Length: 306
Image 1 (cartoon, helix red, strand yellow):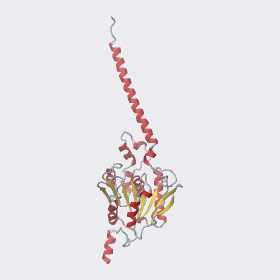
Image 2 (cartoon, helix red, strand yellow):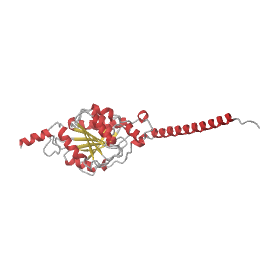
Image 3 (cartoon, rainbow, N blue to C red):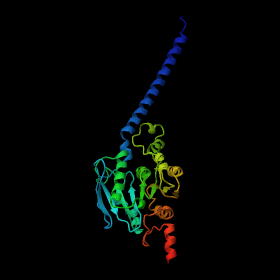
Image 4 (cartoon, rainbow, N blue to C red):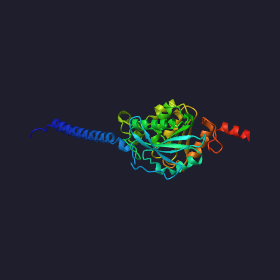
């Protein structure tokens, strides 16, 4: 009886096992690359959720305006004029922002005599074009330029960015002189946030819309208030805390207990904004007594005159 070729059989088994392992690895790598390619191709769909409907404000003290950008787009914006000596907020909304759903925010500003210009990015709410990081930055600059052309002093402009809008807001305030910066539920960078959601992918290497607020915030020359909700599951509050730690003084981080990503206005955002501005904002002219924001030094002077 011929002897069995044991070495040949073991070699066959070993080769079969390694072949199966190789096939599994190649399949996993293929799935990884395929999903990564899909994420890369659908990046804009993840980041931007525009409503294209253009809606007129229902309040008679809010006026719809059109802004022209440096690259030829026309933007929808809502404007309310500030009372004498009160701040004007330049507001940048989140990735699904619409001006008509912000009535609580507009009311709180109006009650304090503050004005606002809410700019709705290219592709949003009747604005022309399609959103991108550089496009949104051009849109932010168009909003500031519009206010300056109305002879509003830069010291009286408070830039305010919510969620997605915090990225353009940080960069605008870092490259222009304004009176202050408010960040509502901000992120360190969009690439870092995406990496936390999908930790297997190196988003910093291939993401096109990175919004690196962590790189810009150190260049600020204005007071900055950062407010986050403790229950924010979309952008964890550590992003806001880390940005505050990187910002020059004066800066303040406030975490509102129990608030989530979309409820900060309801849960007390402006209860933090007004005292912060009273301590750190320097208006170009003293606010009148009817203005809800009274800087501490000016309030002391007014009381001394009584």
